[in-house]
Amino acid sequence: MTMSCSHVRGAEPATGAVAKAVAAAEHKCVAAGERWTASRRRTYELLIRAGRPVKAYDLIAGYADAGETAAKPPTIYRALDFLAAHGLIHRIESLNAFLACNVEGHAHTAQFLICDCCGRAEELDAGIETIVASAANRRGFTPTRVIMEVHGACADCT
Image (cartoon, rainbow, N blue to C red; front, side, top):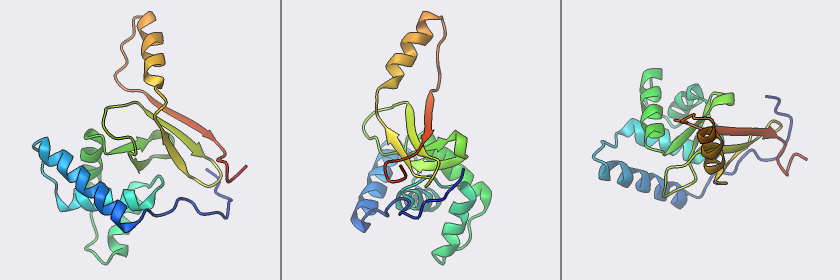
């Protein structure tokens, strides 16, 4: 990916918004009978604060930047696996990066608009899963996971 734009690559959310998102995630996990560990909390918080796709090794650096004990790769990957399994984050396959989910309340197909210029990624809730399921069913195929990634240029870059 070529990053050549000078405009802001995703604004950090307000402190209150971060705390609210983290508290909601904790509540969701605890209600499901899961443990909300410090590494899961910190990894999720870093993704919320970033507001853009982040690679796992950049998350490791994020721990160190905050003056915390450096996290080991297995710790980060376990946290990412947990957060993804609980619908709190998505993996953007083409970037090998992770993004906090911004669609609440229901399971959904991950759909992203990804700017190849500035790196911004926007999650959509466009209902594409109905179209994909219908086309797959007509062919006797049962999808288990659908991820749609659309690469191009965002409004700020065009």
